[in-house]
Length: 614
Image (tube, rainbow, N blue to C red):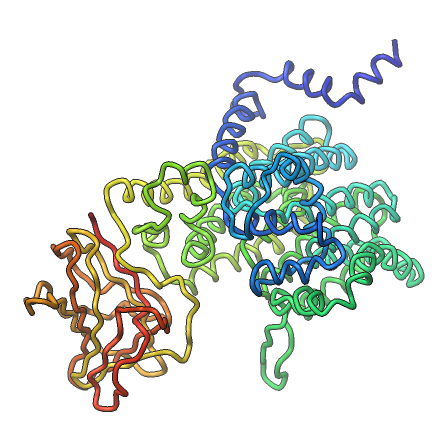
């Protein structure tokens, strides 16, 4: 009988069934069936409608592994025409194994940019499965450190619906969960005292994202004080990395594409302060956390867990507080932050401030990194009239002060550390903070709605007939390619009307180092008849940030479809204003300057977006 009961406890499916049957449909102050049902439905919808294009590129590229296993990086370079494969082989190998059913079924992408919905969803399914498996290991960690069944289950749920994770995994749709999975499993064995497994698992994590190295080191020096042990476990961690690097080190393409990956320069920003010139803040902060962890001695397993959750959160601040990063990378901090939250008397507050972080992140990211374009790889691509959105999430949010947005995110990251110290860890064991479940529900709801509502507005505008007349605002910025208008001179450029109403013209402003004119003359002329259809002086008080895109129309303009109109931009007397341009040898909408020092017509155009209605 005892053996039978033990088997029941070990069988995960039976345990899940028993947990589900023992859960109430709704209970306000506890995790209940409705929490799981609603969150699962929301995540399912996000799964099929949202996906940023990077995963598509990686998934498509991994098919080269079947025929070019030994020269993968060279073949990848040739296939993409110079677009590098930047990761170590593990990412592509994982997808090559996962994509075998697609390969056998004939769903082989013709090119790196092939946008197949079936393939896209298959690519996305692998990291989502790992996301759920990682959540189960969060449960196991909770049980290991004494959370008890109820608190551990809530910790698992919190990981699944935490807004940073939902954004990274279901909206942005990336594979950073590969790193997180191996780190979380490694942390589980770390807490069980199995250091060799911990080291090897973190070594595998490093092959997916190099950030895992810093998390490994801080956990290692917290537990091990003997240099000999530190060296041997570091060697074990390095083994998986060396296994992938050494066979490829002779490849020129590997050296250029992986070892020279631009993301490695994200941590090389220099900072000057007083006498000290050009020191690296990431290195300084990480070194400080490592030294602090090394000198900290823990008396028992509970204290080790407490300090481990704090130091990994502090290392997250060193990484994301002082280096450039892509938004999906934030998934790396989620497991450590959540473990800190669950033993912290400030846990409710730490979840609450995450709402501020998410809103700032959404607005900041929607400018150029990820926004409404996530719909172009999901199921809605079959329904949307176009892949070009006239109204962008960046426009819907309206708040465009990037410095304040970055400041808000930085402060929240700092709050995670300051109020995540072990002195606040008095919710250990199976004690759950009052109201924590409501904070988790609220953060999940806010995180989804703050993204989906602006996204829905963009879609609604498209179905209402809003279209893009022309748009090069997403092209790479050409810092030296600018045109300046001053002292009553002007520039002009032709625009072809693809609809009946011109809604807005947004241009990328160059402020330079001098103040710009207070009034910008904006004139729109029918090129054929010379009729002025719009003429206003635009107040430029809000044109404060260099390289930002600003609207220059104050009202919509009726135009005739198919006609060409000339946009004329001028400054007031003694005024000065600049615009960024882009070079395009094939364009017919050429920028014309009328300044005295102009060198004639050049094959470039203003960097701008023109939108209207059919």
